[in-house]
Image (cartoon, rainbow, N blue to C red; front, side):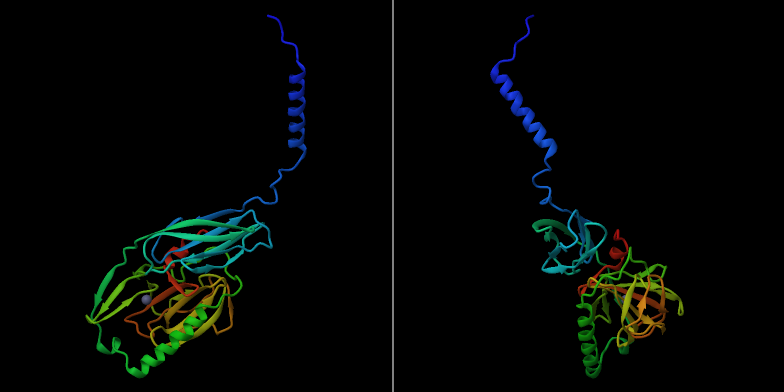
Length: 293
Ligand SMILES: [Zn+2]
Protein backbone atom coordinates (compact mmCIF):
# COMPACT_ATOMS: atom_id res chain seq x y z
CA UNK A 1 0.00 0.00 0.00
CA UNK A 2 1.32 3.39 -1.01
CA UNK A 3 1.91 5.98 1.75
CA UNK A 4 0.06 9.27 1.47
CA UNK A 5 2.31 12.30 0.95
CA UNK A 6 1.71 15.44 3.07
CA UNK A 7 -0.24 18.10 1.18
CA UNK A 8 0.16 21.86 1.89
CA UNK A 9 -3.23 21.91 3.74
CA UNK A 10 -2.09 19.09 6.03
CA UNK A 11 1.10 20.97 6.80
CA UNK A 12 -0.87 24.10 7.62
CA UNK A 13 -3.20 22.31 10.05
CA UNK A 14 -0.23 20.52 11.58
CA UNK A 15 1.47 23.87 12.21
CA UNK A 16 -1.69 25.39 13.77
CA UNK A 17 -2.19 22.38 16.04
CA UNK A 18 1.44 22.56 17.14
CA UNK A 19 1.19 26.28 17.94
CA UNK A 20 -2.02 25.73 19.96
CA UNK A 21 -0.42 22.81 21.83
CA UNK A 22 2.66 24.91 22.68
CA UNK A 23 0.53 27.88 23.77
CA UNK A 24 -1.63 25.64 26.00
CA UNK A 25 1.52 24.23 27.54
CA UNK A 26 3.30 27.51 28.27
CA UNK A 27 0.37 29.81 29.09
CA UNK A 28 -1.38 29.57 32.47
CA UNK A 29 -5.14 28.93 32.29
CA UNK A 30 -6.82 32.26 31.48
CA UNK A 31 -9.30 32.00 34.39
CA UNK A 32 -6.79 30.88 37.08
CA UNK A 33 -7.51 34.06 39.13
CA UNK A 34 -11.27 33.73 38.77
CA UNK A 35 -11.38 30.10 39.93
CA UNK A 36 -14.56 29.47 41.94
CA UNK A 37 -14.11 28.69 45.62
CA UNK A 38 -15.42 25.33 46.81
CA UNK A 39 -18.43 25.57 49.11
CA UNK A 40 -19.60 22.69 51.27
CA UNK A 41 -22.61 22.53 53.60
CA UNK A 42 -22.58 19.80 56.26
CA UNK A 43 -24.92 18.19 56.98
CA UNK A 44 -26.99 19.00 53.87
CA UNK A 45 -30.10 17.50 55.47
CA UNK A 46 -30.92 18.65 59.01
CA UNK A 47 -33.85 18.56 61.43
CA UNK A 48 -35.71 21.54 62.93
CA UNK A 49 -33.48 23.22 65.52
CA UNK A 50 -30.21 21.75 64.20
CA UNK A 51 -26.88 23.45 63.58
CA UNK A 52 -24.82 23.07 60.39
CA UNK A 53 -21.46 24.16 58.93
CA UNK A 54 -20.61 26.06 55.75
CA UNK A 55 -16.98 25.56 54.70
CA UNK A 56 -15.48 27.66 51.91
CA UNK A 57 -12.10 26.60 50.50
CA UNK A 58 -9.87 27.87 47.70
CA UNK A 59 -10.46 31.55 48.37
CA UNK A 60 -8.21 34.48 49.21
CA UNK A 61 -7.39 35.49 52.79
CA UNK A 62 -8.95 38.93 52.26
CA UNK A 63 -12.22 37.49 50.87
CA UNK A 64 -14.24 36.78 54.02
CA UNK A 65 -17.40 35.06 52.74
CA UNK A 66 -20.88 36.09 53.78
CA UNK A 67 -23.96 33.88 53.87
CA UNK A 68 -27.58 33.90 55.00
CA UNK A 69 -30.14 31.15 55.59
CA UNK A 70 -33.78 32.00 56.31
CA UNK A 71 -32.76 35.68 56.60
CA UNK A 72 -30.21 34.88 59.34
CA UNK A 73 -26.62 35.95 58.65
CA UNK A 74 -23.86 33.39 59.16
CA UNK A 75 -20.47 34.64 60.37
CA UNK A 76 -17.20 33.19 59.08
CA UNK A 77 -13.70 32.73 60.51
CA UNK A 78 -10.51 31.34 58.97
CA UNK A 79 -9.86 27.59 59.13
CA UNK A 80 -6.52 27.41 57.32
CA UNK A 81 -4.96 28.59 54.05
CA UNK A 82 -7.78 29.91 51.85
CA UNK A 83 -10.37 28.26 54.15
CA UNK A 84 -13.31 29.88 55.98
CA UNK A 85 -15.89 28.27 58.25
CA UNK A 86 -19.31 29.47 59.35
CA UNK A 87 -21.76 27.84 61.80
CA UNK A 88 -25.49 28.36 61.32
CA UNK A 89 -28.68 27.14 62.91
CA UNK A 90 -32.36 26.93 62.01
CA UNK A 91 -35.08 27.54 64.59
CA UNK A 92 -37.06 24.57 65.92
CA UNK A 93 -40.22 26.42 64.86
CA UNK A 94 -39.07 26.82 61.22
CA UNK A 95 -41.23 25.18 58.55
CA UNK A 96 -39.82 22.05 56.96
CA UNK A 97 -38.68 22.16 53.34
CA UNK A 98 -35.79 23.25 51.17
CA UNK A 99 -34.10 26.54 52.16
CA UNK A 100 -31.84 28.61 49.89
CA UNK A 101 -28.36 29.29 51.29
CA UNK A 102 -27.18 32.55 49.74
CA UNK A 103 -23.39 32.74 49.79
CA UNK A 104 -20.95 35.39 48.59
CA UNK A 105 -17.42 34.01 48.37
CA UNK A 106 -14.39 34.92 46.24
CA UNK A 107 -16.34 37.78 44.64
CA UNK A 108 -19.04 35.39 43.38
CA UNK A 109 -22.60 34.85 44.50
CA UNK A 110 -23.81 31.27 44.84
CA UNK A 111 -27.13 29.79 45.82
CA UNK A 112 -27.01 26.38 47.47
CA UNK A 113 -29.76 24.61 49.39
CA UNK A 114 -30.25 22.92 52.74
CA UNK A 115 -33.10 20.53 53.48
CA UNK A 116 -34.99 20.91 56.77
CA UNK A 117 -36.84 17.80 57.93
CA UNK A 118 -39.43 17.48 60.67
CA UNK A 119 -38.04 16.75 64.14
CA UNK A 120 -40.04 14.40 66.38
CA UNK A 121 -40.12 16.53 69.52
CA UNK A 122 -41.47 14.67 72.59
CA UNK A 123 -44.36 15.95 74.70
CA UNK A 124 -44.63 15.43 78.45
CA UNK A 125 -47.24 16.38 81.01
CA UNK A 126 -46.11 17.32 84.50
CA UNK A 127 -47.87 18.07 87.75
CA UNK A 128 -45.88 20.43 89.95
CA UNK A 129 -46.63 22.41 93.12
CA UNK A 130 -48.44 25.59 92.05
CA UNK A 131 -45.59 27.81 93.32
CA UNK A 132 -43.27 26.14 90.77
CA UNK A 133 -45.61 27.04 87.92
CA UNK A 134 -47.25 30.38 88.76
CA UNK A 135 -45.26 33.62 88.51
CA UNK A 136 -46.36 36.75 90.40
CA UNK A 137 -46.75 39.94 88.30
CA UNK A 138 -43.65 41.40 90.04
CA UNK A 139 -41.54 38.38 89.17
CA UNK A 140 -42.91 38.40 85.62
CA UNK A 141 -41.39 41.88 85.22
CA UNK A 142 -38.05 40.57 86.55
CA UNK A 143 -38.15 37.67 84.06
CA UNK A 144 -38.96 40.04 81.17
CA UNK A 145 -35.97 42.24 82.07
CA UNK A 146 -33.71 39.18 82.37
CA UNK A 147 -34.85 37.89 78.97
CA UNK A 148 -34.20 41.29 77.38
CA UNK A 149 -30.65 41.29 78.77
CA UNK A 150 -30.01 37.70 77.65
CA UNK A 151 -31.25 38.47 74.14
CA UNK A 152 -28.84 41.43 73.87
CA UNK A 153 -25.97 39.13 74.93
CA UNK A 154 -26.94 36.43 72.42
CA UNK A 155 -27.03 38.98 69.58
CA UNK A 156 -23.41 40.04 70.18
CA UNK A 157 -21.06 38.81 67.45
CA UNK A 158 -17.46 38.69 68.67
CA UNK A 159 -14.26 37.29 67.21
CA UNK A 160 -13.86 33.52 67.14
CA UNK A 161 -12.57 31.95 70.36
CA UNK A 162 -13.81 28.36 69.82
CA UNK A 163 -11.30 25.81 68.62
CA UNK A 164 -12.25 22.36 67.35
CA UNK A 165 -15.42 20.47 68.34
CA UNK A 166 -17.74 21.40 71.25
CA UNK A 167 -17.84 18.94 74.17
CA UNK A 168 -20.61 17.92 76.52
CA UNK A 169 -20.18 19.87 79.80
CA UNK A 170 -21.22 16.82 81.84
CA UNK A 171 -20.81 13.22 80.64
CA UNK A 172 -24.11 11.62 81.54
CA UNK A 173 -27.47 10.64 80.08
CA UNK A 174 -30.14 13.12 79.04
CA UNK A 175 -33.35 13.42 81.03
CA UNK A 176 -35.16 15.98 78.85
CA UNK A 177 -34.38 16.43 75.16
CA UNK A 178 -34.28 19.63 73.10
CA UNK A 179 -37.68 20.72 71.78
CA UNK A 180 -39.69 18.78 74.37
CA UNK A 181 -43.13 20.33 74.86
CA UNK A 182 -43.92 20.39 78.58
CA UNK A 183 -47.49 20.84 79.71
CA UNK A 184 -47.48 21.77 83.39
CA UNK A 185 -50.55 21.41 85.62
CA UNK A 186 -52.67 21.15 82.42
CA UNK A 187 -52.41 24.92 81.87
CA UNK A 188 -48.80 26.10 81.29
CA UNK A 189 -46.94 25.01 78.20
CA UNK A 190 -43.26 25.52 77.59
CA UNK A 191 -40.82 24.42 74.91
CA UNK A 192 -37.50 23.11 76.21
CA UNK A 193 -34.77 24.98 74.31
CA UNK A 194 -31.80 23.03 75.62
CA UNK A 195 -31.01 19.58 76.99
CA UNK A 196 -31.17 18.47 80.63
CA UNK A 197 -28.20 16.29 81.56
CA UNK A 198 -28.55 14.04 84.61
CA UNK A 199 -26.06 14.39 87.43
CA UNK A 200 -25.47 14.65 91.15
CA UNK A 201 -25.28 17.86 93.18
CA UNK A 202 -21.63 18.99 93.05
CA UNK A 203 -20.67 17.22 89.79
CA UNK A 204 -18.14 19.25 87.77
CA UNK A 205 -19.51 21.28 84.85
CA UNK A 206 -17.00 22.01 82.09
CA UNK A 207 -16.72 24.69 79.41
CA UNK A 208 -17.92 23.23 76.10
CA UNK A 209 -15.26 25.17 74.20
CA UNK A 210 -12.85 28.10 74.57
CA UNK A 211 -14.72 31.31 75.33
CA UNK A 212 -15.33 34.34 77.48
CA UNK A 213 -17.77 34.50 80.42
CA UNK A 214 -20.45 37.08 79.58
CA UNK A 215 -22.82 36.19 82.44
CA UNK A 216 -22.28 34.46 85.79
CA UNK A 217 -25.17 35.19 88.16
CA UNK A 218 -28.49 33.99 89.54
CA UNK A 219 -31.53 34.16 87.25
CA UNK A 220 -35.18 33.58 88.14
CA UNK A 221 -35.75 30.41 86.05
CA UNK A 222 -32.16 29.32 85.47
CA UNK A 223 -30.87 29.73 89.02
CA UNK A 224 -27.09 30.14 89.06
CA UNK A 225 -26.32 30.57 85.39
CA UNK A 226 -23.17 30.90 83.26
CA UNK A 227 -23.14 32.06 79.64
CA UNK A 228 -20.00 31.68 77.52
CA UNK A 229 -19.39 33.63 74.33
CA UNK A 230 -17.37 31.51 71.87
CA UNK A 231 -17.31 34.12 69.10
CA UNK A 232 -19.05 34.15 65.67
CA UNK A 233 -22.38 34.57 67.50
CA UNK A 234 -22.14 31.21 69.31
CA UNK A 235 -23.03 31.09 73.02
CA UNK A 236 -23.41 28.19 75.46
CA UNK A 237 -25.65 28.34 78.54
CA UNK A 238 -25.29 26.39 81.82
CA UNK A 239 -28.20 26.58 84.32
CA UNK A 240 -29.26 25.46 87.83
CA UNK A 241 -25.62 25.35 89.08
CA UNK A 242 -24.94 24.98 92.81
CA UNK A 243 -21.69 26.97 92.52
CA UNK A 244 -20.19 29.39 90.02
CA UNK A 245 -16.41 29.07 89.63
CA UNK A 246 -15.96 31.92 87.13
CA UNK A 247 -16.72 35.64 86.94
CA UNK A 248 -18.05 37.79 84.14
CA UNK A 249 -15.17 38.74 81.81
CA UNK A 250 -13.05 35.63 82.56
CA UNK A 251 -11.51 33.70 79.67
CA UNK A 252 -12.02 29.94 79.81
CA UNK A 253 -10.51 27.03 77.91
CA UNK A 254 -12.41 24.01 76.62
CA UNK A 255 -12.80 21.49 79.46
CA UNK A 256 -12.20 23.98 82.33
CA UNK A 257 -14.47 23.45 85.36
CA UNK A 258 -16.68 26.56 85.37
CA UNK A 259 -19.14 25.53 88.10
CA UNK A 260 -20.83 22.68 89.94
CA UNK A 261 -24.09 20.96 89.04
CA UNK A 262 -27.09 21.77 91.23
CA UNK A 263 -30.80 22.44 91.39
CA UNK A 264 -31.08 26.24 91.78
CA UNK A 265 -33.86 28.29 90.13
CA UNK A 266 -37.00 26.56 88.84
CA UNK A 267 -35.70 23.02 89.00
CA UNK A 268 -37.19 19.83 90.36
CA UNK A 269 -33.89 18.07 91.13
CA UNK A 270 -30.14 18.20 90.40
CA UNK A 271 -29.36 18.37 86.68
CA UNK A 272 -27.58 20.62 84.19
CA UNK A 273 -29.62 22.56 81.68
CA UNK A 274 -27.28 23.03 78.72
CA UNK A 275 -28.26 25.36 75.89
CA UNK A 276 -26.58 26.59 72.70
CA UNK A 277 -27.50 29.79 70.88
CA UNK A 278 -26.33 30.75 67.39
CA UNK A 279 -27.10 34.43 66.74
CA UNK A 280 -29.93 34.19 69.32
CA UNK A 281 -31.43 31.04 67.72
CA UNK A 282 -31.77 28.15 70.19
CA UNK A 283 -30.27 25.09 68.54
CA UNK A 284 -30.17 21.45 69.59
CA UNK A 285 -26.93 21.08 71.61
CA UNK A 286 -26.63 17.46 70.42
CA UNK A 287 -26.41 18.68 66.80
CA UNK A 288 -23.63 21.13 67.82
CA UNK A 289 -21.64 18.39 69.60
CA UNK A 290 -21.77 16.35 66.37
CA UNK A 291 -20.40 19.11 64.07
CA UNK A 292 -17.12 18.23 62.38
CA UNK A 293 -15.12 21.31 63.45
ZN1 LIG B 1 -33.72 22.25 80.99
